[in-house]
Length: 163
Image 1: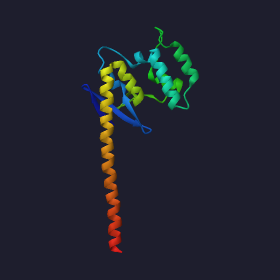
Image 2: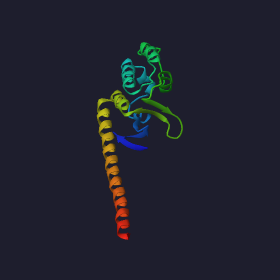
Image 3: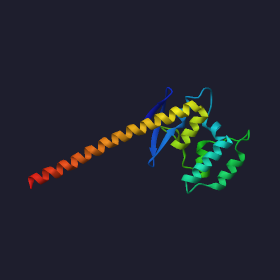
Image 4: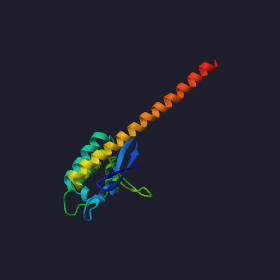
């Protein structure tokens, strides 16, 4: 698990199935007042965005349940949790986990959209910090590859000398 710092808020980044997921729970700490992820999920534009994202990336997405949720989104009495969203629609973009590293995580595309809900400035810094993290990981990967190639070449070289 990696951490990035956006405008003074530490945010966890985890990898699930080779995709980066960013903690929405941590991101909420940057928003003033008492807000919950379910408040964001009740917005019609949010539900439409999530539906389109799932349509593009999730072949098992449940469009029937999505249509029901979409028809209720934006109503005053409508409320849905991340867990309900994931169970009803078989969504893969949002994950609610319990335990030590628990919280609500979203695929990076969705997390960036959630960042806009916090503020436009927050979204820009979130993207910037996330890119910095990826650049740093890439540099580490490059070092590791060179190290492994050197190790392999050393063995080939020493074996050739022995023979």
